[in-house]
Image (tube, rainbow, N blue to C red; front, side):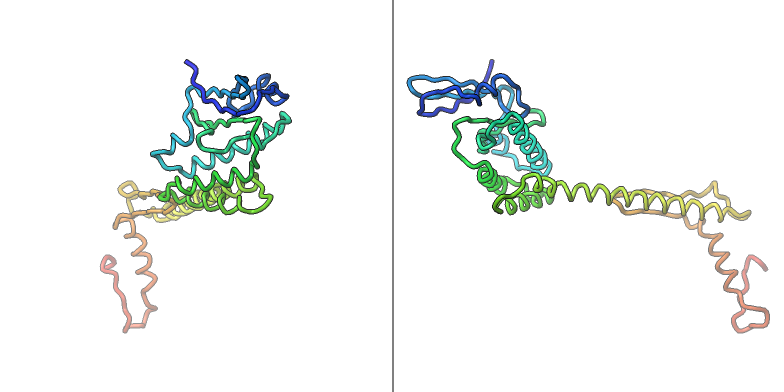
Length: 255
Protein backbone atom coordinates (compact mmCIF):
# COMPACT_ATOMS: atom_id res chain seq x y z
CA UNK A 1 0.00 0.00 0.00
CA UNK A 2 1.33 3.41 -0.96
CA UNK A 3 2.12 5.72 1.92
CA UNK A 4 2.11 9.45 1.35
CA UNK A 5 2.27 12.84 3.03
CA UNK A 6 0.28 15.82 1.79
CA UNK A 7 1.03 19.52 1.88
CA UNK A 8 -2.04 21.73 1.55
CA UNK A 9 -2.09 25.33 0.37
CA UNK A 10 -5.12 27.63 0.43
CA UNK A 11 -4.58 28.59 -3.15
CA UNK A 12 -6.11 27.54 -6.46
CA UNK A 13 -4.08 24.72 -7.95
CA UNK A 14 -2.14 25.56 -11.08
CA UNK A 15 0.03 22.97 -12.78
CA UNK A 16 3.02 24.90 -14.06
CA UNK A 17 6.24 23.75 -15.76
CA UNK A 18 7.71 22.65 -12.42
CA UNK A 19 5.09 19.97 -11.84
CA UNK A 20 5.31 18.80 -15.44
CA UNK A 21 9.11 18.54 -15.12
CA UNK A 22 8.78 16.55 -11.88
CA UNK A 23 6.18 14.19 -13.31
CA UNK A 24 8.07 13.54 -16.55
CA UNK A 25 11.41 12.88 -14.85
CA UNK A 26 12.66 10.78 -11.97
CA UNK A 27 15.07 13.12 -10.27
CA UNK A 28 17.46 11.27 -7.98
CA UNK A 29 16.95 12.21 -4.35
CA UNK A 30 13.61 13.96 -4.96
CA UNK A 31 10.36 12.37 -3.74
CA UNK A 32 7.73 11.60 -6.39
CA UNK A 33 4.94 14.18 -6.16
CA UNK A 34 1.44 14.64 -7.58
CA UNK A 35 -0.57 17.84 -7.47
CA UNK A 36 -4.33 18.33 -7.34
CA UNK A 37 -6.84 21.05 -6.67
CA UNK A 38 -10.01 20.77 -4.54
CA UNK A 39 -12.42 23.58 -3.63
CA UNK A 40 -9.94 26.32 -4.42
CA UNK A 41 -7.10 24.67 -2.47
CA UNK A 42 -3.93 23.01 -3.70
CA UNK A 43 -2.72 19.63 -2.50
CA UNK A 44 0.72 18.10 -3.11
CA UNK A 45 1.01 14.38 -2.38
CA UNK A 46 4.49 12.88 -1.84
CA UNK A 47 5.10 9.15 -2.05
CA UNK A 48 7.12 8.13 1.03
CA UNK A 49 6.52 4.37 0.94
CA UNK A 50 9.26 2.43 2.77
CA UNK A 51 10.86 5.62 4.04
CA UNK A 52 11.21 7.28 7.43
CA UNK A 53 11.38 11.00 8.11
CA UNK A 54 14.52 12.55 9.55
CA UNK A 55 12.41 13.82 12.44
CA UNK A 56 11.22 10.31 13.33
CA UNK A 57 14.63 8.73 12.72
CA UNK A 58 16.42 10.97 15.20
CA UNK A 59 13.60 11.24 17.72
CA UNK A 60 15.31 8.66 19.94
CA UNK A 61 18.68 8.29 18.25
CA UNK A 62 21.49 10.81 17.90
CA UNK A 63 23.00 11.97 14.63
CA UNK A 64 26.49 10.62 13.96
CA UNK A 65 29.31 12.28 12.06
CA UNK A 66 28.95 9.71 9.28
CA UNK A 67 25.22 10.49 8.98
CA UNK A 68 26.01 14.17 8.55
CA UNK A 69 28.61 13.52 5.86
CA UNK A 70 26.19 11.37 3.88
CA UNK A 71 23.42 13.92 4.26
CA UNK A 72 25.53 16.91 3.18
CA UNK A 73 26.94 15.11 0.13
CA UNK A 74 23.49 13.97 -0.97
CA UNK A 75 21.93 17.39 -0.36
CA UNK A 76 24.60 18.99 -2.53
CA UNK A 77 23.97 16.38 -5.26
CA UNK A 78 20.20 17.02 -5.16
CA UNK A 79 20.69 20.78 -5.45
CA UNK A 80 22.83 20.25 -8.54
CA UNK A 81 20.26 17.85 -10.02
CA UNK A 82 17.47 20.39 -9.45
CA UNK A 83 19.54 23.02 -11.26
CA UNK A 84 20.18 20.60 -14.14
CA UNK A 85 16.41 20.31 -14.65
CA UNK A 86 16.06 24.11 -14.57
CA UNK A 87 14.00 23.97 -11.39
CA UNK A 88 14.08 26.40 -8.48
CA UNK A 89 16.43 25.15 -5.74
CA UNK A 90 14.65 27.34 -3.17
CA UNK A 91 11.66 24.99 -3.41
CA UNK A 92 13.54 22.19 -1.63
CA UNK A 93 12.09 21.84 1.87
CA UNK A 94 14.62 21.61 4.68
CA UNK A 95 12.41 20.84 7.68
CA UNK A 96 13.24 17.43 9.28
CA UNK A 97 9.65 16.24 8.84
CA UNK A 98 9.97 16.71 5.04
CA UNK A 99 13.31 14.95 4.65
CA UNK A 100 13.10 11.17 4.33
CA UNK A 101 15.54 8.28 4.51
CA UNK A 102 15.68 4.79 3.06
CA UNK A 103 18.62 2.36 2.72
CA UNK A 104 21.45 4.86 2.84
CA UNK A 105 19.68 7.52 0.78
CA UNK A 106 18.05 10.81 1.81
CA UNK A 107 15.04 12.09 -0.15
CA UNK A 108 13.75 15.64 -0.34
CA UNK A 109 10.38 17.25 -0.99
CA UNK A 110 10.25 19.73 -3.83
CA UNK A 111 7.38 22.13 -3.08
CA UNK A 112 6.59 24.45 -6.02
CA UNK A 113 4.77 27.01 -3.87
CA UNK A 114 7.60 27.42 -1.35
CA UNK A 115 8.43 31.02 -0.38
CA UNK A 116 11.80 30.69 1.28
CA UNK A 117 15.54 31.05 0.90
CA UNK A 118 17.25 27.64 0.70
CA UNK A 119 20.50 28.84 2.29
CA UNK A 120 18.67 30.26 5.31
CA UNK A 121 16.67 27.04 5.63
CA UNK A 122 19.86 24.97 5.60
CA UNK A 123 21.21 27.06 8.47
CA UNK A 124 17.99 26.48 10.42
CA UNK A 125 18.48 22.75 9.85
CA UNK A 126 22.00 22.96 11.32
CA UNK A 127 20.42 24.25 14.53
CA UNK A 128 18.41 21.04 14.62
CA UNK A 129 21.66 19.10 14.12
CA UNK A 130 23.19 20.94 17.08
CA UNK A 131 20.36 19.68 19.29
CA UNK A 132 20.40 16.11 17.96
CA UNK A 133 24.17 15.63 17.61
CA UNK A 134 25.97 12.73 19.27
CA UNK A 135 28.44 14.58 21.46
CA UNK A 136 30.31 11.36 22.21
CA UNK A 137 31.21 11.27 18.51
CA UNK A 138 34.15 13.66 18.03
CA UNK A 139 33.72 13.69 14.26
CA UNK A 140 30.06 14.63 14.66
CA UNK A 141 30.93 17.50 16.98
CA UNK A 142 33.55 18.78 14.52
CA UNK A 143 31.16 18.68 11.56
CA UNK A 144 28.24 20.26 13.46
CA UNK A 145 30.52 23.11 14.51
CA UNK A 146 31.70 23.66 10.93
CA UNK A 147 28.30 23.63 9.23
CA UNK A 148 26.58 25.75 11.88
CA UNK A 149 29.33 28.35 11.83
CA UNK A 150 29.87 28.46 8.07
CA UNK A 151 26.16 28.68 7.17
CA UNK A 152 25.93 31.89 9.19
CA UNK A 153 28.20 33.59 6.64
CA UNK A 154 26.46 35.50 3.88
CA UNK A 155 26.70 33.85 0.44
CA UNK A 156 28.37 30.75 1.85
CA UNK A 157 29.30 27.86 -0.44
CA UNK A 158 27.78 24.50 0.47
CA UNK A 159 30.32 22.78 -1.78
CA UNK A 160 33.22 24.26 0.20
CA UNK A 161 31.56 23.28 3.48
CA UNK A 162 31.19 19.68 2.29
CA UNK A 163 34.88 19.60 1.30
CA UNK A 164 35.87 21.01 4.68
CA UNK A 165 33.82 18.36 6.49
CA UNK A 166 35.50 15.61 4.48
CA UNK A 167 38.97 17.12 4.72
CA UNK A 168 39.90 15.71 8.11
CA UNK A 169 38.86 12.20 7.13
CA UNK A 170 40.91 12.34 3.92
CA UNK A 171 43.96 13.72 5.73
CA UNK A 172 43.56 11.07 8.43
CA UNK A 173 43.36 8.38 5.78
CA UNK A 174 46.55 9.64 4.13
CA UNK A 175 48.28 9.86 7.51
CA UNK A 176 47.28 6.28 8.28
CA UNK A 177 48.69 5.15 4.95
CA UNK A 178 51.99 6.92 5.65
CA UNK A 179 52.10 5.38 9.12
CA UNK A 180 51.46 1.92 7.66
CA UNK A 181 54.34 2.41 5.21
CA UNK A 182 56.62 3.59 8.02
CA UNK A 183 55.73 0.60 10.16
CA UNK A 184 56.33 -1.77 7.24
CA UNK A 185 59.73 -0.20 6.69
CA UNK A 186 60.57 -0.68 10.37
CA UNK A 187 59.57 -4.32 10.14
CA UNK A 188 61.73 -4.85 7.07
CA UNK A 189 64.74 -3.12 8.65
CA UNK A 190 64.34 -5.17 11.80
CA UNK A 191 64.11 -8.37 9.76
CA UNK A 192 67.35 -7.45 7.96
CA UNK A 193 69.09 -6.81 11.27
CA UNK A 194 67.86 -10.12 12.60
CA UNK A 195 69.47 -11.96 9.70
CA UNK A 196 72.88 -10.54 10.75
CA UNK A 197 72.49 -12.06 14.21
CA UNK A 198 72.12 -15.63 12.97
CA UNK A 199 75.58 -16.66 14.11
CA UNK A 200 76.79 -20.18 14.89
CA UNK A 201 76.01 -19.86 18.59
CA UNK A 202 72.44 -18.59 18.01
CA UNK A 203 69.59 -20.90 17.03
CA UNK A 204 67.11 -18.64 15.23
CA UNK A 205 64.51 -21.41 14.93
CA UNK A 206 63.84 -21.15 18.67
CA UNK A 207 63.08 -17.44 18.60
CA UNK A 208 60.81 -15.14 16.63
CA UNK A 209 59.67 -11.58 16.52
CA UNK A 210 56.14 -10.96 17.72
CA UNK A 211 54.98 -7.97 15.74
CA UNK A 212 51.67 -6.32 15.99
CA UNK A 213 50.23 -2.91 15.06
CA UNK A 214 47.34 -1.45 17.05
CA UNK A 215 45.90 1.97 16.22
CA UNK A 216 49.15 3.08 14.63
CA UNK A 217 51.35 2.03 17.59
CA UNK A 218 54.01 -0.59 16.95
CA UNK A 219 54.33 -3.26 19.63
CA UNK A 220 57.39 -5.48 19.40
CA UNK A 221 58.33 -8.11 21.93
CA UNK A 222 61.58 -10.08 22.05
CA UNK A 223 62.62 -13.10 24.06
CA UNK A 224 65.60 -12.78 26.36
CA UNK A 225 67.58 -15.39 24.41
CA UNK A 226 67.29 -13.39 21.21
CA UNK A 227 69.43 -10.63 22.66
CA UNK A 228 72.16 -13.01 23.89
CA UNK A 229 74.32 -12.74 20.72
CA UNK A 230 73.98 -8.93 20.81
CA UNK A 231 75.03 -8.77 24.45
CA UNK A 232 78.08 -10.89 23.71
CA UNK A 233 79.04 -8.61 20.85
CA UNK A 234 78.69 -5.48 23.00
CA UNK A 235 80.59 -7.07 25.87
CA UNK A 236 83.48 -7.96 23.60
CA UNK A 237 83.68 -4.33 22.43
CA UNK A 238 84.01 -3.21 26.04
CA UNK A 239 87.26 -5.22 26.54
CA UNK A 240 90.28 -2.91 27.08
CA UNK A 241 93.54 -3.00 25.24
CA UNK A 242 96.26 -5.38 26.53
CA UNK A 243 98.02 -3.79 29.48
CA UNK A 244 95.07 -1.86 30.85
CA UNK A 245 94.79 -4.02 33.97
CA UNK A 246 92.59 -1.67 36.03
CA UNK A 247 89.66 -2.15 33.66
CA UNK A 248 90.35 -5.74 32.73
CA UNK A 249 87.22 -7.59 31.60
CA UNK A 250 87.14 -11.36 31.29
CA UNK A 251 84.32 -13.12 29.50
CA UNK A 252 83.50 -16.17 31.61
CA UNK A 253 82.62 -18.18 28.53
CA UNK A 254 86.12 -17.59 27.11
CA UNK A 255 87.84 -19.06 30.18
